[in-house]
Length: 367
Image (cartoon, rainbow, N blue to C red; front, side):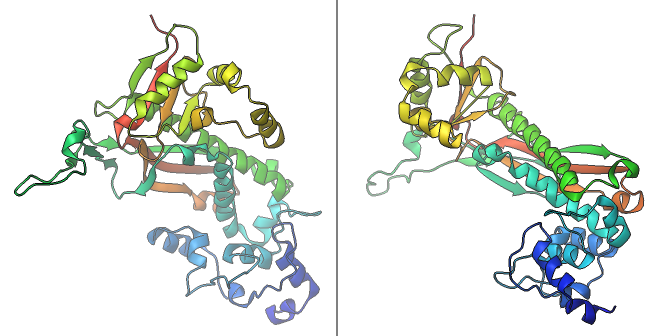
């Protein structure tokens, strides 16, 4: 059967509807999809243009998705290859190697990224994420030590304009390479369904994102190597955490806003059981949606990377930034050639302080 015949079959329509395990009821045109050969050269082109394969396929010269298309360009490639990711009869991993081995690396990368999204806390910590073409990054040094030098006020004739001094930090921040080797034999995976395999990939992305949260937390507490560790305030009494201690932490943020609190689960339990926060409506919201209430208007985030005696308060709009040299990638050659004996997933990323005063640490155990 040639491609023209295939397009007219019920199977083609079903593949288009069920490529991701659920039908949209909308027709999917696979004509341009079939004209594209996904191979190593296409991965190399995407890499050279600073794109993922999915992004490259959406370019005008390849297979851009029409408005309201139920499938994106990569999903149409899966549909064309007959790879179903869900529903009653999802494809097996072996089907990738039988019909579309070159699609497997991008499939894995996409699913790992979906796992990262399952830990949204990182986005609530960083003010900005930027890419640089270097293995080191020199953050801004913003002089906020004298507010009177940078404030709106009437100016007399010949008066000096208020100014904000912005220079570079004394020390650059190295952008580290972080990687994970996923080792699994073809035999162990070949009969697994793609829906099973996705869960494994989601967990990898989830774990990668958890590690990045730990890196951001470390930067918030200890700084980025430019003598900009967070200011520490002590609780009123060592070994206890009270409502007054949280108010003391909150009071450190003028002119900033303490909109986020990050702490270990032990301290989070202390906060959740404070009498001042035993609001019946807050408990109802938690039971209904799982969303934690916001003490003093701050979003409460759990990170067990924070020492159990510390609570970090921050204004997430100004405290820390994420710097990326190499976005998340996967070694596609190994996945294609070795039938997935080993896949190396890597990223080059670091975190740097923006305005140090936008993060303050409360220490509840001290001598």
